[in-house]
Image (cartoon, rainbow over all chains, first blue to last red; front, side, top):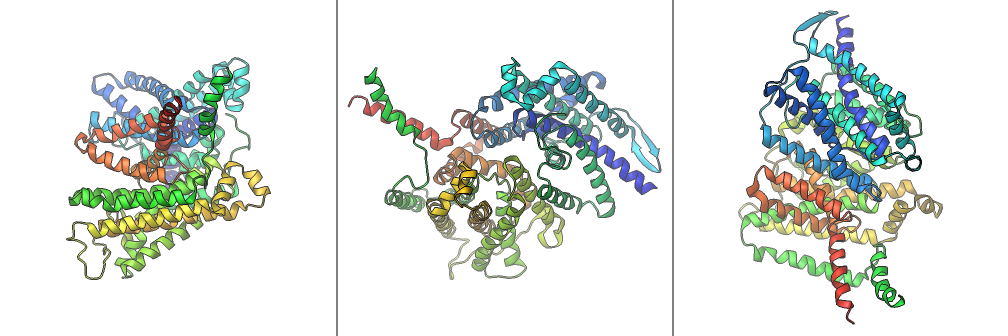
Length: 291
Length: 344
């Protein structure tokens, strides 16, 4: 009973964080058709901005939303500076990999210079601990498990029920036609990056609440988010979300039964098998389009 | 009206000529090749101190890795993000072969190249049917898998601690440690010459032309009888051999191995060498390796600012000249040549 509860809880918790990261990657890929390798750095920067604001004396309830909004701005600026000028170039996928990697390195080293290498921690969403089904958990983790699906549902509503969200999906499906019906495609590109960056920033704030932060804290979650989008299919939003939770459970079960060392190797084995059988991901349809 | 077009047209047509393999007559290239490397061989006479030779040795190693990556990435159009894993496999293959199996260092050096080639063939299998971004993800996953296996088998590989006291190379009774790095300098240069010669001959051959054809128009190339499976395997295997040897040499030279070779920072630097140099040239990647390595040394005083300055420069060059330094040189040469021609 306790084993099951542990796997279930661990899977839900890790899955929530992976989902927050992976959705942003998928959103950028579907709308712009590029892969953002500075996504992990967004996560780190969101956490550090939140920490700085709390340090300045703001209550967490004010500091966290401000950090998320600032991250939206950072995402927009990054898009405008290192992605937008390259749109229309033949080798854009490859060049954007290197420009986003370089931009990530710039931000990472910038954070190291400003805040230093010493580990930091931001206050938990809710302080305290609880015991559920024989497993001790912190209320912070439970809050993340509850809040994440709400945010993802809100994103889904935005993409499916609002005009702006529909416009974003239209760009993802057919860019030329979107130009023709008068959508501001450049602004929508910026919007996709802004949403992705703020989701990553929020994931960073969540993570900074239970683990020590460092300037390189984003690289491992970025890697996991990459696996998630490959596994779930990169061309939708719902695919990566399901895959994120599935991989969360898989990881929790693996580390329970086989130990922490073998989990990454098993995970990559599953990933490569998936790609050989279904290169478009297990939850994806063959067409490109959001939701 | 006709006058101006006749003036502009020749230069314009020249600029529009695609850089296809085998464009330059091979005799011209051979002369340039010999002169270029002869110049590199004379460098220790100009830079007398040991540290300068160390920097050049590192630049040679990076140049081998970057130019071989250009074969799969530039010519083949295969977004192989596991290239640094092949280098890492070379590092660890050499370390384990010499340290545990007690192989002769030179045999181990060669064997590391073979092992890296076999690993490249293995990683090609899952990507045979994939395209674009999915190749990036699988090969990236492969690199991480190799790293995780090395970390988890810490009893043999040293895990995150790495390995130390790896046997170095030897030349008869010559003292490799106390010769001011002269021997290693010339071994590294010889490896770079061999690798570059191999790459240039390969891309100028029929096989080289066929992999470029597959990159540029896959359907047409396949319809003309080019096998995508065979050529893709050939491309990755060919790019792996000298990469593995470079890894082995790196381990022999540094006398230690660590999992840092699988890290993102090294991959970013080598990838920027390939892209900064300009893809599908081989020479571009080599020149960019020298430029970036020496530039990084110049900026040693900047400390923490160094990676940030490098990042800004990479972004700047990529935005202004997407075809890299070679494109930049060509553009400025074109402007100079245009000015020289105009009066005549």
